[in-house]
Image (cartoon, rainbow, N blue to C red):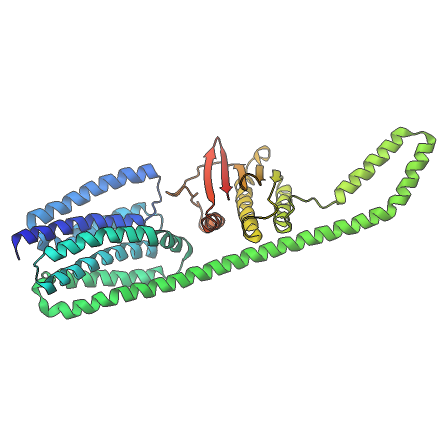
Length: 427
């Protein structure tokens, strides 16, 4: 091969090392703070890239490819495992998937270059074109749904990780061991079949993952709808009891009026006022309180208010909604239910005087919601500003709120300020 073209291949291989790390970072979430993660990542990349570049330019591409498992794969595997938010099968699947995708691109461009007999130039040009397309496509189309899958799907990751790990080893062996594939034309038919099989396998894996995620969402929605139905049933029962009590109170009204008239004839104004005050208090006690005009949302707020009262949580509800909601009423009520449930969980173990939740919304000029509550401890956020759950199984309500905001293109902000956690949503 022309020495000039060999240098081009070496440079494209060097660039591929940066690209594979960038691809992984797009699909990766750290468990530590952003500052700690940034500092550790810079230190790691300096040592990791420096060592591999030294081997590449000192001993050549053949040696670097033969020892890439020891010099590139294992060190990066160890570092990212330490700082990863999702470990276990999810981590290994992501790690191996990114590496196999890069090896796949490198092998395909190499085979095309070999087929046209350019000895490196076509390969170099194709890789320069493919790398930015890969980065853009993964960031633009794959990042959000893939991170959602990582959060929602809990089963099957180890099996998928084993499959991708086997593909990684197979591609590494086929492409570079014992020598570069270009020097082993008899192995090219096998390599081509493996290259065809890889995208088909990943398509199958993601189809299965998507079906699992759809099942998870379906079950979550069913759980929420059942909870909403229960709250509505309780609300209807409360209103029925209040209506029955009011009917009895109306029936007794003539006796009360006769008593007031008798007291007035005696000139006992103090007794009249006391009797009227008692009757008013009785009426207030049996009236079912309404929090907003929308019956679905009103049922949710009434249920949450009852929970707060049982837990001795002071709750301020000032909810104003437009006559015509800009979103589905049931979905909006789920947002309120999830946000207020999170707030209750955050304050229920605080000292009694600190148990306080404020829920308010305005209908104009835009429908905006703010739910605030004090908290103890630390609240950590991911790179999108979404609070991270501190216990397994938590955070589902927050993810539901974020999904609602994305669906309706709403502005959704989570922030902490002076010991208070605030959720702000603008539609």
